[in-house]
Length: 158
Image 1 (cartoon, rainbow, N blue to C red):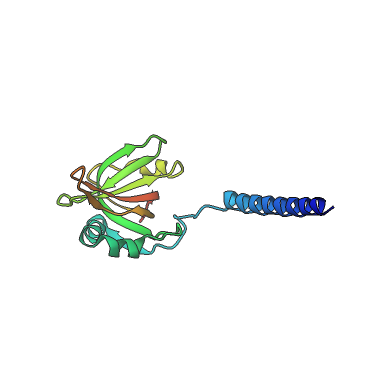
Image 2: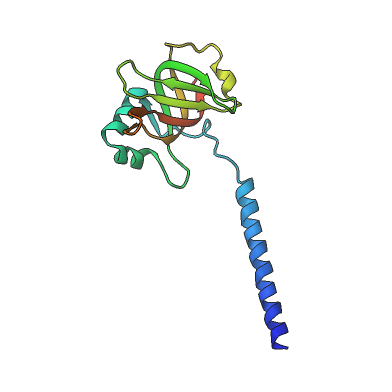
């Protein structure tokens, strides 16, 4: 009799935990994505300014721009287009970099914003809005500078 009651209690607790866990998982899966383009811009900078901030004091720049909860700052970065490429997902990637800069800003567009790059040419100065994911740094193993990474990017129309 006691074993039967213990089994029933454990079964009820197990089922409740599965239902709660499933509910939390379903909520997180269906949680709406952050709409970067309609959100307020936190900082407006040039590509040279943000690269210098990161190369001068990486930790302070991370504290200023990045958040561990996924809500990193939304930036508008102005700079000269040095390269337009496409990643493996078919998303356009634009590199903004000054002639004297050691690194630049790599902005990845979404499939919805790719078309806004039509007419943008190398050497043109543009402003791009996106959410920062990584800062510029120097990789000693590769002896290369890594770019600032923006995601969910789009061209800012004047």
